[in-house]
Image 1 (tube, one colour):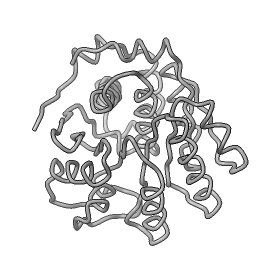
Image 2 (image 1 turned 90 degrees about the vertical axis):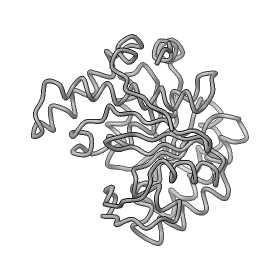
Image 3 (image 1 turned 180 degrees about the vertical axis):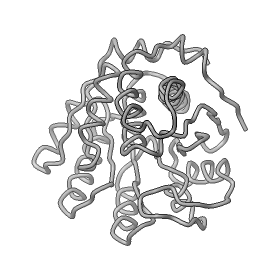
Length: 264
């Protein structure tokens, strides 16, 4: 995969507005900084007109919902659409509770999203496919993830990314599979949440959303793969910190060298 998206991202240093969960806010902000971006973390409803107007992308993450943050998400999303900036939805644990399900339904009805990124269980729920969820974790299932990605993409008219050992990205017609996953990603809190923010940053670049999402997910997976090369499966703390360092160092040539991408 040839691109200069990482170089352009660092040159542009886009401001990324994150309405995210309390577990991952610090890690997400540091991950964006590692890539050369500027994070802003705000869920105050009083700011939800102004911040999307000054930002280059909005990332909505439902990991630790409250009634007040839902109002902020709705207002920010509508403002982002009005200001024509890309919007990403991370439906964390959407199948776990009725509150999460109803929130995501409302957000998808009121806001035009450019990308929905989640794990297999979350995207399977949006496709109304049976999946054994475990809280906010991926759970287990045997459905065709390529088809699920296509179906959800067509249903909501946006790019869909399913993260896991293999990442699946679809625009409703084609599916790209990234086979650069590592066993340590699911063992740290916030790896998927940070990826959603990284995708939001890449979507600020002036290219096709499918290609940009593929570039973002591949760059992120390769960054993790490089860290894992020098670690074993119980060095989760080292991976947590090492991923930030790897994101700061990774370049387009390295991504091209390591990328393992196929298409359905």
